[in-house]
Length: 524
Image (cartoon, rainbow, N blue to C red; front, side):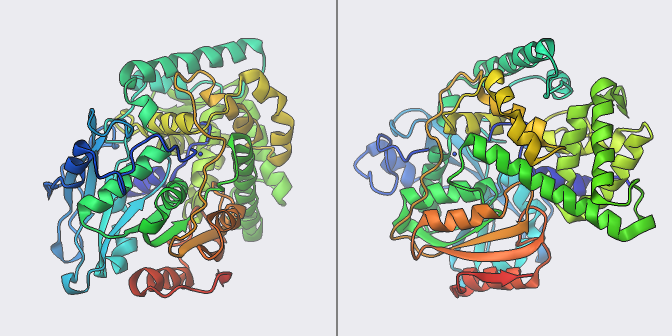
């Protein structure tokens, strides 16, 4: 059961990062694109005209591949660049180019405006993701121009890059769960080299790739696109970005949807612990499905506990001795864990996880390694997108906590209790920013948004990467009368594309007709 190119793209786009640390106060020192009109530099930026043209093939940093296919009816995708200040505190200084993509609304006479998407990561390219998922949002194109972008530091927007493809192959094959001081030293040295590579390649950009700057970029984008309000669809990290935007520009929020919601009250440690629990829950559900199918399931074991014990045994064996993978690359424990996590993002990929585990148990690690490659942004030609480098850069400049490997090690007990399979990896990941050359700015984001229009907050009870509890937390943090909670009782990362007609109808009616559902609506 090989993975097709389109399925690999879907897996990659859906991914958040398992092995990277994974929020800004709304600092008043930077210029506000919504109000600071006295600056000549800012005035020039808000009045800039975009030059739209047919989209080129994605850059290597965006993941490569062919140009986006035409839309239903033959309409073509258009791409452009938006100029934004590198440092929002100095809007007349150096600028960065932000790559944009759009598909025009089908019915111009009923057009509401632009609907801006962020598909998450952080670090994912919106310019490549939007065409990949366009069919899922075709109903929304009836009244919106569908728009997405590569945030600063991502894809075609001054990408942060930290190492060569060959160096990344070696880096991702490392043991990220050290068993002794020698392995701890090896990991620490590798993280230091990686961080120095990021600084060497993108030192001037690194301090400015955080979420607050991305929110300011979106408000500039809103003005340049000609929209009075920002209509927005944020998925995963995109909900965090959307929450920060709503806090900074509450009066500019139009119709907004947050799907697969990041908990805004969680710092680095709580966020990582929540993901450990979320991935464990998804693995439990995968194993239960296997049990329910009986002999149709190829994995050994008659219970969830027995199936997961087999997975744990496989990972333990790989820690001691990797197995053949793809070409001359072997499947390591780290890559196997990444591959397992990647397949848990969608129930659609459970069959690949089952096949990959069964094959790895027989000594063939190719499928799990392919899944891990998708997580890490590695194409079949061996080149890497910059999704992981951008993820590290954005997370490390957002969050101020800096855990050493020793401090991460002290917390392993609670992570192992949360997840026998993913606990060690999520626990050690606390130290991901320990060597980063730029300080972080917040413990967690402020998303309080008094005065904002209603925002639909959609949580999925089976979501592994952004556990369901984050949706309730976001609703409470946005404030009374702003967050409207919608629950999807399903599996996978995100709800709108999860196959629920109820979720799709609820969201579409809100975005297309302005119908706000009752908070507490439940869909199955």
